Length: 402
Image (cartoon, rainbow, N blue to C red; front, side, top):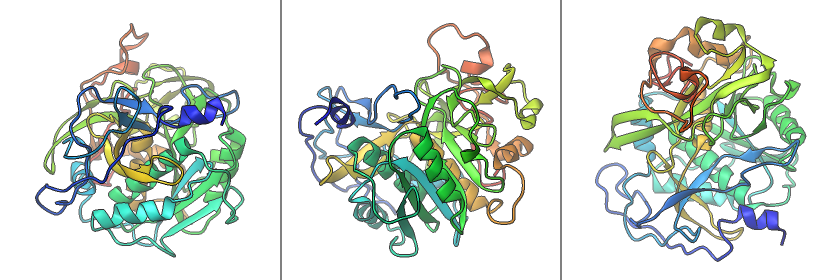
């Protein structure tokens, strides 16, 4: 196997996993979570730096110091379940019935359907079979591209996040042939022309880049992760003027109550050097001469607010684990757009402008930072009242901003 494949597999050794146990009261009494282990840390599932013209996925998973997902024998206490996620963002009572959220990622994931079924069954969500889950390649065919473990783990996080935020949404997964931006762009175009799609989530990115027509689909909410490296400048496609750039927060819950939410230290932010400032950003002080990211945000810190996910540990086996990164926040925001019902066929204009006109329906995140070094402009790195780089305008408080 190639070094690149091993980098996608979390550590060179076999991953030690086991079934997770229950023990929590209430609707999510069977919530599976990692046991408590010391020295756990978040680790990327895809390469840290993509090759030129390629993107990397932004999912992170909690592992031990050997880079292994540890054996699970009890609750870790920080993994979000669907009930907590919907409660945190005031999404209870909303419905996305009849609307489709598309997920665009690279490579194949052989057990996607069965793993998603396990996740949804565990949390009492409606089964997602024929008519609910559709998986196609970048040209709409049913022959999957070659499988890749890191990107399969990314896809597991994406589909589980959509299921958690919008249980009655349909899900379309479009798998690009590779992680090249050209192939991913082809997959986005395929998603956009699929009937019923109202939002497309892209949990990947590369360096700052010139605009691509692949992300230019008025009426459809296209979201993209800003990345997990803190303040660093533009990241494409998040920096596209056609896309809702999604940053990240550290969300702390007490049961189903949102206690605190601060800027996550890893949330990507910065200014594009090539893409012009969209007119909707003229209403806020970004400090950027051109396009600024993020626009909005959601839970992303894998330590605090990471999502309980049923994901592959190899190309033939799967287990419960805790995932985060801005790969978590992008599909959450795409789902909130679907719940809002303001995007899709027959809608004009770009969805990324909507939150700027409805900031009162967002949780303004006013504390936390994503930079340990001196920041050229405070609002690029430090959360404060109004717009800031790590969290944009804030996180959902219901669907009114979308």
